[in-house]
Image (cartoon, rainbow, N blue to C red; front, side, top):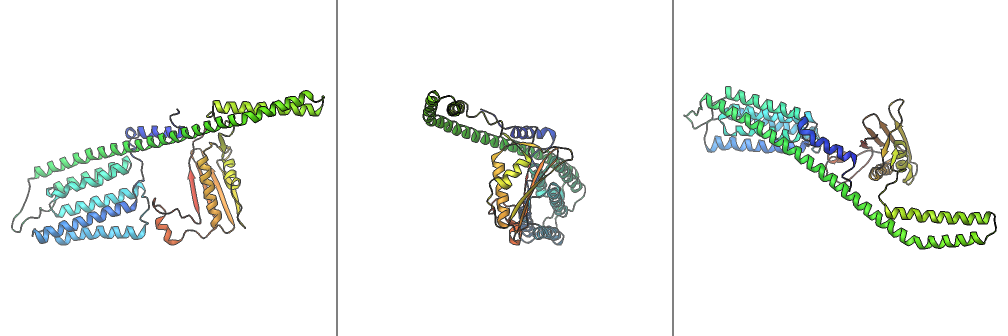
Length: 407
């Protein structure tokens, strides 16, 4: 049984070496909605702790200063919700900046409420853990460094811990520095653990995908083998009859065109029997001729081979690449061809007069763009485009980008 296709094997190898190279888990995995929801939860928890401490426990704390930091965080969340679609997948630097804001906001709250003497100082570990499990190594290191700086600042200077009116609760300076050291160690340990766990999860996910691909391929090969065996069995008898009749005709016919035709029929029938026998014996031998396809051929098949012509809509395709280079040859994947055909069919459904398919390639990647002159997406659909649970509503411009590796 074949282990996996070459592209899957390469991805598995990269995932296995990611922790040693510092890449860690794959980036751009956080959606805006996730961070916004976590920030709303943090705002609710901070507000509840503030109100309970001030009005139920009657601790003397700077109420207006703490409310200012909470309102700032709420305004930041509202701006993000109004300016960006909630399903948007954040880039590395965007997620890192949001987590940095959360660290600074929490550090400001802790500064007003006792610094590292406040038991809630342990919450500074949360942004680091989230970054370690979702972002790349450089961003995680920067955020961990920011958390350590905030801890050192809180250990050196912070307001007293709010306590009952008339009493002052002050821990020794040595204890605060020890707490900073302990929390800094916790940042390193938890971030390392989260990164290792995320990288292992990514490797297991890729391994599962490879196993599923291999299993699906073996099932297809098994079905093809059974079909070939059945075809060889069913077609063997009529082909044998054809061969016998052709031989009789060749033997009884006088020399001339009739005998040559009969001999040709006999030889071609024998050839069919040989082909069926080889298919039955080795159905997974593959088709060397059709195993690879050039980029222009792929676009031609997708843009014209299987499409039903629409009234007044023409489909044109072009290939653009590096100067003085030939278009690449790709391993033929039926699923890629069917997906590309589906995109083009969808574009023709909503196009006015033209659909253009442009294939661009360089030394590292291939980009296929399907563009039509239709009305485009309705405004109410934009917020749902990136959601995996949203219906597959496709209108107007559609972009399909795929990357292959070729020899």
